[in-house]
Length: 228
Ligand SMILES: Nc1ncnc2c1ncn2[C@@H]1O[C@H](COP(=O)(O)OP(=O)(O)O)[C@@H](O)[C@H]1O
Ligand SMILES: [Mg+2]
Image 1 (cartoon, rainbow, N blue to C red):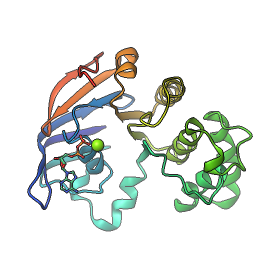
Image 2: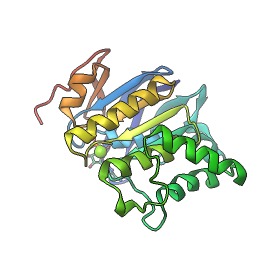
Image 3: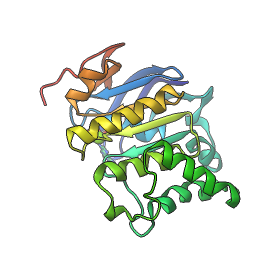
Image 4: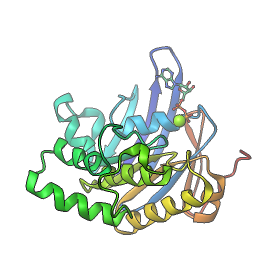
């Protein structure tokens, strides 16, 4: 489903963020990406979202080399991938409902289809009754549920999460992990960058460790493996 072959990323200032990274992810996998700060994790995510173009190497997604895709077809590539961030990134002046509906408006979903889709997804992520709440009226966990709903409402095959529990307390983090795991069980491939040792060590999923822009460890049922 996703394949990176000898991917190099050198930023204009000369920093080599990725140094020949090789990674294969199959459809339906749940993959933790770990590693020290500055290792290249966010760079990897930006390449998968096509926010960056690698200096060298091949990135195949769903059978297509996305490094060769023309600029005007980038939106079609981005539709394959939902994304969730540590800081939620909700639109502050829109309700929970509107934040999610907005993702459907962007993909030109027919307006009469939007309401039932948003209702269904809000129920699925556990946000029933919160339709009219503004982001600042929601808890961190609820805001992250809105952000997850927004990321999956267009039904992308891949969900990328960059430290989705980084701003949440341990109990709320586990609720979010249960939600992500249920989304994964329903068929979505999930790639999650995290520094949460407790979560990685308890989930017993595939763990890929990156250091200095390369994969240094890749275990099918792995552990976090760092002290922080
Ligand atoms: N836009 C950028 N321009 C220049 N260097 C960058 C940029 N973004 C990240 N870097 C550098 O690339 C390396 C990898 O960064 P990053 O992918 O953000 O690591 P991580 O997410 O693992 O902490 C670091 O040395 C970082 O300073
Ligand atoms: Mg990062």
